[in-house]
Amino acid sequence: MFYFFLGNTPDLSLLELRKVYPGEFTFVTKDIASYDAELDLNSLPHLGGTMKVAQSLEVVSPKKVISTLVELISADSQKNIALTDYASLDLGRAVFHELKDKVERSIRFVSMETGPHELVMLSHQHVLELNLIPSGSLLEGKSQNIIIAKTVWIYDAEDWVSRDRSKPYRDIKRGMLPPKLARIITNLATGGKSGLTLADPFCGTGTVLMEAMMVGCNVLGGDTNPEAITGAKSNLEWILSTPGLAPRTYALKLGDATHFDEFFPSCDCIATEPYMGPLLDERNPSSLDKIKNIAKGLDKLYRGAFKSFYKSLPVGGRVVMTIPSFRVYGKEISTISIDTLVTLGYNYISSVPYSKPGAAVIRNITILEKK
Image (tube, rainbow, N blue to C red; front, side, top):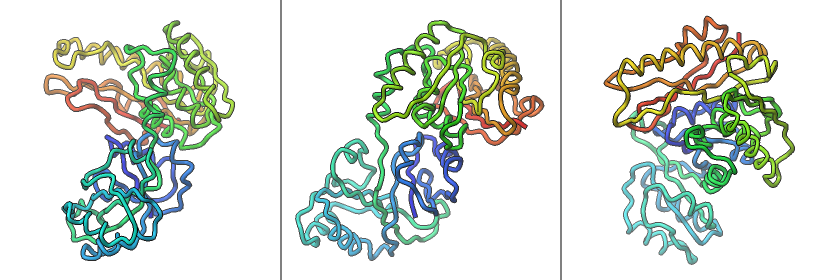
């Protein structure tokens, strides 16, 4: 059994996993999911919404946790040990001293705390991290045995930051989509398959296209801003220089998303964050009437875009789009509705909201398939 430690929006992370892997995922806690099938560890760096993965070693009663930890640590050659308690056992410092006394070799705990460890630190040091996880579902409030699971993969935080900050072209007004979210919507669109042609009709600085290239896609991008097209091209050329990245192809066109099919007649899938209106000051947003008018304008834009997408996609081809809604003045104002999308020829698959606390704009990560 494997355990996936999910990102800041667990429902979205789990949605990504269920689209990429065939086995069954089940929430164990609100941000840990179990997986009951074989797992290729080499596939894990393709994920955008998972922080780390652990593999089950033992399932024991709470009374046997300490003695089992002694056995597991003694059998492993690592000197640096981390212990993270997700089972609310309230382990104190005395437990670490007891473990050090009972293990018949020199060990060093890299943290004397029982909360989640700094993942960057763990990924750089040779550390055996053992995670204490409740068996069954902690959400059901039942008495549990304890799963002891060894961390087998940690996401490369520095790689994500470097790819975002070191790319040659950045525009804070057009490049606000986080790379990890771009990777998630890419995986939702492709289902984890490589070799597809993925399109982003609102490509901006090319964040989605870059992440799609990283997981084996050829890409197509369109935007109405000439500077964005030029910048996206420099970013894609830069990503193609990544050591070990297999050759990819790309094409970029200056054009409106409502005429996407005219400059890109075919693609396998679409992943995009569209134009979502003028930036709103979350502390002092525009008037309610103005925001309603923004929403109406976006609804019109998206209708035209989805009509064009339909002509380029194959039957069953997916569109994954961050459809905005606005939470202001105690109300939530929507843009295009699911009912409208269905009438335009799409099957609705699912949608997960993604936003920061208190944000005025909510990204609704929406998955559709052409009928």
